[in-house]
Image (cartoon, rainbow, N blue to C red; front, side):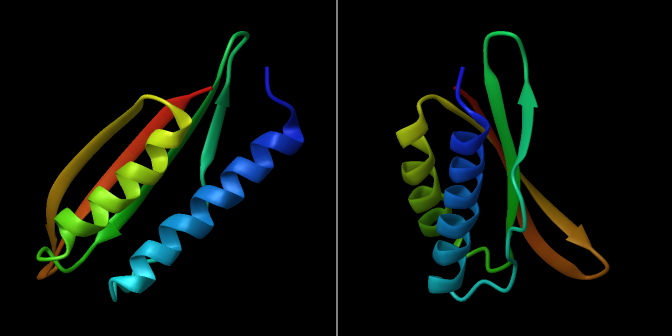
Length: 97
């Protein structure tokens, strides 16, 4: 089991890196947190982000996915959204340590 200090470090690293990638690609959305689900054997990290410019989606998600894979197997789901005339793709991810 990983320590609380390690969990906080991983959460901070994920938010910082994903926001850096979003900013580098001129995306307006910023991720504010990563959630944790703790079980007896594992700790599950869960988060989501948005990509507003659909032309950027492949490069942004590819870079973020490559970063997240350093933690092991990552489950990723994306969905195109149209809300009040705005179009964006929302991406959810989770992985266990």
